[in-house]
Length: 149
View (cartoon, helix red, strand yellow):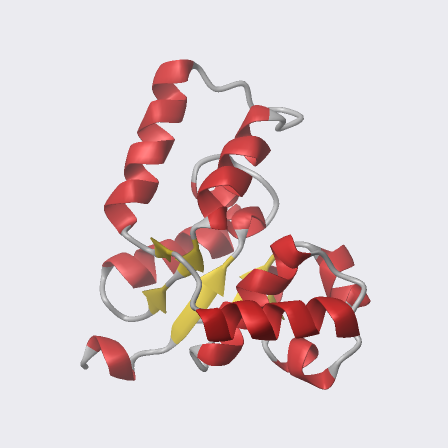
């Protein structure tokens, strides 16, 4: 299958952190990562993922990574090559979604990427799902624990 023909997903930081720190639903997140690494699905995310992942690790309530361990996480994410700068169209959709739903631009940009790229955002943030009011937002976001791949 060509890379453009396989299913595409946009994981947010709540999913990415589970690739490196054991949490609830980590097995689902790791399955997503394994499918990407085997070429069965495609993953992409806005460059914001770097900062959100770093912050999630820094302030994680249980995990205390050393600087060396943190460097290994960053290197592993870099090796995946899934992050990129959002396009103008993605920013415009994200802004509209942030206005239509009580969500931050941080959350909206992941959904904007998913909408433009005809994919689905995957999150483990249940509170985000409950705040999605517009049909377009709801149709383009999946909860990690509900994803079956």
